[in-house]
Structures are given as C-alpha cells and as structure tokens.
Image 1 (tube, helix red, strand yellow):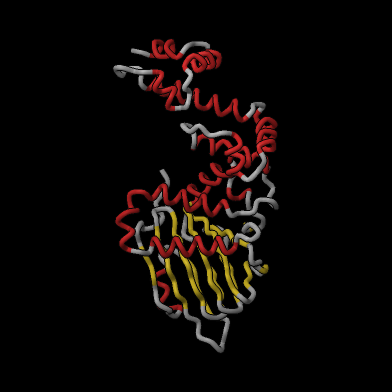
Image 2: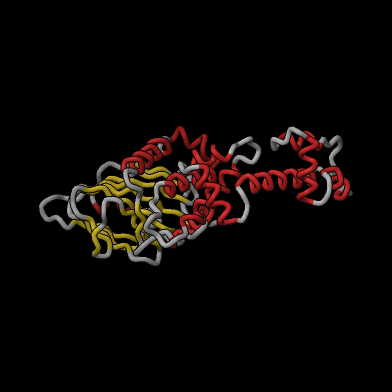
Length: 318
C-alpha cells in the first residue's frame, strides 16, 4: 500500500504574506524563500489542496526570489514557472516549456529575477512510478532529461488552465464532502491529464512501445464495448493503418486479434468465477462482451482454449 504523504482534504488559500508568515503553510517542505530584489518587498500568495498522495499548489511571488531546499520525503515534485523574466534551476535557465523535476534527494535551487507564478504537483513517488508505467510503459525518470520534462508545443495554456480549474474546484470546501471517498480516482485522473501534455519526442524511450501501451490501455478500458479499431486510431490521432502496423510489429498479432483474445479471456475468467452460482447463462456472459452469435463465439472460444465454454464451466465446478 502506498504511503500517505499529505493530510487529505487540507486546503490552503492565503493572502499575500511575507516570507516569515508564509512558512507555517509549507507543511512537510524543507525550503527557504528569500528576496533577491532590494527595491521591492517580496510577498507570497499560496493556494493548495491535498489528497493523500498529491499536493496541487499555486504560488505567486511578487518580486525576484530564490527558493532552496528539499521536497517532502518520499515525493517527486513537478514545477512549472510562468514569468516575464528569467528563471533558473541549478544555475541553468528554465525555458517556457520546462517542467522541473526534483525529489527529496535532489536539491531545489531556483532563482527568478522578476514576478513569478509557480504551478506545482508534489506526488508520492510510488504513485507517480505506477501511473507512468501504466501510461508510458516506463518510469518517470526515463521521461526526463537533466531533471526536466517538456510540455507539448502549444499546450502551455492548457496546462495552466487545467491547474487553475483543479485549484478552483478542489479548494471549494463544499466539494470536499463529495470527493473524499474517491481520492484514488482523482489522483490517477490528475496524473493522466498531466502526463498527456508531456512531450516525449526528445526522450530516450521507445515511442512505439508507448503507443502500444496506449492502444492496449484503451482496449482494456473498453473491454465490454463494441469498439472498432478505427475508433481507437481516432482517439490516438493516428491512422488505422499506422496503428495496425505498430501493433503487429510490436506483438506479432493484429489489434483485432488481441482485442478478441482479451475479451475471450475476460469471458473465461467470468465463467470460472461464476462456476458455483445457480442459473449461469454463458450466452449472457458472451453478450456482455459483444459476442452475439453464439455458434461463432463457441467456435473461436474452443479454438483458443481447446475446450467449449460449457466444458470450462464443468471443469471448474466444485
């Protein structure tokens, strides 16, 4: 079971405060803020909501700053900076598409020479690893270059809007009554949306393997649907021909063959799980997975498993 990092449901929404008065709101963070502008006083506004394994936050720094320290223990931090000035991480300039990745073992060393907004996700490390492997088929570390990710071209505004909408929705105390029982789904949905905006074109990972993973994810998510291969291709914004080529090249099967095998395995598992129930109708289970012609279904089932559906049921009955 993954470790709870943050107090779920905890909401922060401060006015503009100086560096001393903002410190109590930086729960679990071992960081220092300071001004590098002798003319203008640094004020900070902080807004955040928490699930057990994610802190989603927005910070506005009114003048030039430095931020130094470490992330909460067991967390990976994704930070995106919006400024008209220059922002640096470990003395290297941050581009307008960069998302900076830090952990509790990577020193956070940020400087900005003007008014700056920072959008940050602090994520429990095991959760991010799990979701990245599910979404991309690899670890988050395989996506980054020198502790940086890139937002897809023309997705910057989408990224900022998504963050603002999250903060607007989940810092509403009224909403907490409705989401507290569904944190796992909320966390996964947040990470899936963020990862969908990451540009992987410059990373070292195998792009075809990622595409294959996305195709399989859609098939698993729509296992009971009568989804066509061209519809999956449309969802991924590639041609059906390209999808079929990638799938066959990576697996040795056509996507149609894989999708059919996936559904047949689901039917077999459901038959086995239902073996001791009364009045089992194999036809109804088959129809659930969009096999409506029973003679055809029985034929391809037997071809795959070397037995009929009824023989499977009889074999596993106690």
